Image 1 (cartoon, rainbow over the protein chains, first blue to last red):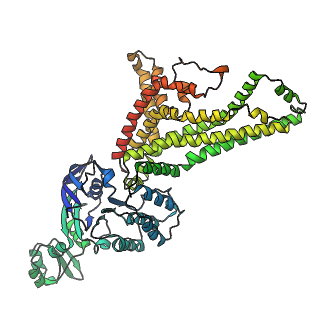
Image 2 (cartoon, rainbow over the protein chains, first blue to last red):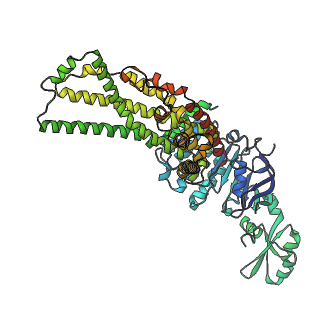
Image 3 (tube, chains in turn brown, blue):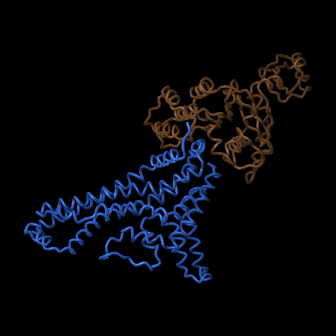
Length: 285
Length: 324
């Protein structure tokens, strides 16, 4: 099956800075892609380009459409949650359901109502009377009832407590995701998405610095815990990063020989957050 | 299931009504209520003062005789006066409507950018053209229709109150009410709306453009820009280059651009003074045959053309301005 998104030479310049610097990537259907980067790295700009919310130079094809010219059609197949606070504050639950049901051709009202029945939301409640967690429940109920091909989540769980965060991703995986759908998610809470991602993209200063599927990440990056006696040997192998825990050193290697590392100590797959920190070292310096 | 363009538009306008129920619905209702209340209070005050001074203009049967002795010409004047009573209710509503539409247009494409809910609206498969169109329809049709319907109901109630008051004085005025032309009044008011749409277009266009374009304070931009230009034009006497007086700029650019959303301004300012108010006995100024003479003025159609241009600009900005 052809790619859901194909980008080549994507560049976006704001007055002062380059938000996207000649970025190229492809995203295949049925994937859950984590787009991870520090603040101001260009994540949101990339998503806005995909959604046709901003202009850019370069080529971008999303589900066969050019988001700059065919946004109206594109949005029939794409759903989008940009953090939690974007539902209009004046609207009531039944109004927003009525509205989306009548303007969106792929919306399944019964499905949406079934999701809402699992929450404490009442039809006459206004968004302004809801907590952040409830707003995101409502938004998720709307989005999950739309049979879209591509779902874009921009910091969807920002400011939510742990219960809502866990519930959010659980619903998404259990009740929404299947092999015909693609999800792109940006977040700073890397630990929470780490186990659901199939692909990982790191973005820094407008450039993609890592683009790999999770299996490849596991093959390529190795973390090894080394006693003080062998630390110098490990350093000689040019690790990406080094940190100290309980008197031992933990080294992170990119593409090193696994057998050689196993000689030095206990090896394991690094967590995405450790990988992220190592990759982004010096970003704010 | 395919959603048709008409259905989408219906729901978009309904959405506007939900959001602006206060301005579109409650403002005219409350204004109408206040108008009636003031009338009732006025009548009560008159009755009290009348009673204190021992004046009772109905009891002697004087008024009855007056009515009985009126000829057809007089009767038609009574009818005209009653029609005026109905229009008077509309007068206050029109001022309120002007303010509602003015501020609605200024906020229509700005508020959702400020509170970022634009990101939700833009996540739906609705074109920016449809969105802007739904706001134009809400401003120039939905709001006036609600105001006119309210105005007609208030006007009717106003007549009833007058009739009931007079009947307390032993005057049977129900026969007089037959002289009024409530249906003609209604037709005139409803028929005026399409004319209003055309006349208001440049204002609606300008306000929506500012609303879609301004990164902050759309009101300031919308008002300050034409006024500042007007001051510059006056200061340097630029209009002299075109052999036009400075007042021309104020009248045709500033006033036309900002205040055409106030209904009736077209009928008051639209003519170059060359169209006399016609009609028998200086009568029904709201008569459609009278008001629609505005269609013959270049002012109206130039405004329509400019308005469409401004609206195209508003759509363009709606497409490319985001929440930042």
